[in-house]
Length: 600
Image 1 (cartoon, rainbow, N blue to C red):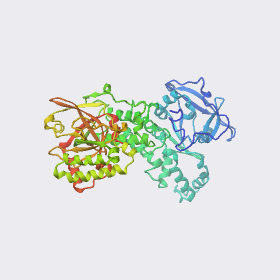
Image 2: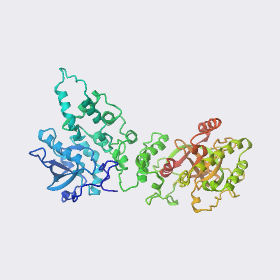
Image 3: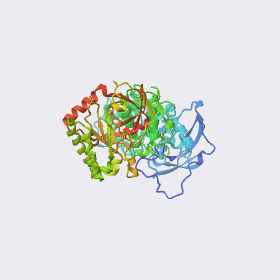
Image 4: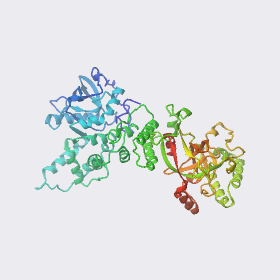
């Protein structure tokens, strides 16, 4: 990871390449001989100036937390790297963004007038941004820094100076009793601009505002306490569901009423912006009331950060019910990977958690944080495995053979709906290109293997009968129950394959076919999981007289899931009854990687 991406150094969409052709200043030199240990911070003092336009001169000092330092902390947008200014830091030139330079000039004036109290903590100056290890250590204690600051100074920028004269005129002409005069157009424009300032949409300010003991808001040539600033916005009827008023409610007024759980913070601040996607999680962990012990590691992939988050929440029992697991997983995935069009590639990287027999979690106890338990609905058992999706499109002969198997598997009263569903399935595949088809289902054996008691009257037991009692289950073109179809192309081994699913004698399924992971076998069970359009393929790996050992091997899609709707009214009724049938409900056990597959 780039050393300058763990904080909001660059706004999204801006270039990090400076147009300045002069030699680049080495910002690391002022820190030489002033290394930080784990329990210290640097603080910066701004030297006074005779004139407002004089160059900014600062000096750094290293202060241990044990000395209980008194300081103010700056909260601001870094701005673009294209707009640079230079200050003097410990006698050496030091580059800062234009917005920070404006803030330093403002703070120097405030310090001279006694409105600000030195020293200050300013991340771009007090952290050696060239030292990755130091930056990561300081990021982990960011919550403590803003919590211990006597005041957090919110800097909104110098552009508001143009509004100041009109606002000053308004204040000087208030009628007796303090009632404000009617807003004029310039005042309304200033308030609207303040309300919509890009600062309020930044992710890191959530922690900075949320932890502050006292806040001062500065813009242009003015400053006001946080409460006065909130009153100013409320007086002008600003929207309380956006911008600073929303943050005031969530981060200040409701801070200790449950709004600072990790789950709630992720939900409430999903739109907050940052340049580094990992900060979508790491920037909120410090503020969360239930995330102590969550380790940040910027060297991890986005998938690994997603997995860490899910397993941490599972371990700490932060999912109130199992129904929250998939929605929260989808939220975290969208926060981390919104700009990635092929998230599956995240799992296939070198640092992927490879699935092999040495990592199997066999018959886990209920407190294992690596195991997620979900309630599923049993659709039925794979009765036929057909050709790959590509083969049935390219070879009409395969399509004819597939149709012939419909009448072999389904009874007379199911043939009509089965042929209708097959026609829809073929049309979907004909309308999809190869890349779309390849992403429909995933091959990934789960690391979790759990045991289910094998009693004939149980949900699983109805499908795991002795070989002589089983419904004839075959692979298309083969008489073997377990043999998978041969592939004419090596890529077909992982391409989705067509399948037909058969319900039990007492529970026919309204969804009869679709495409499944290339690992699918006849006899696999198909289970629907709430909040996911994909179904799971579950296989019996070991059987005895008492139990069956089950494991998820991949995902599947039914025809109706592929087209996004259920066409037939009678099927709608049957499907609702199927989901409501308590006897079909079963518990499945999954690892985080399998959860990730269901979110695709």
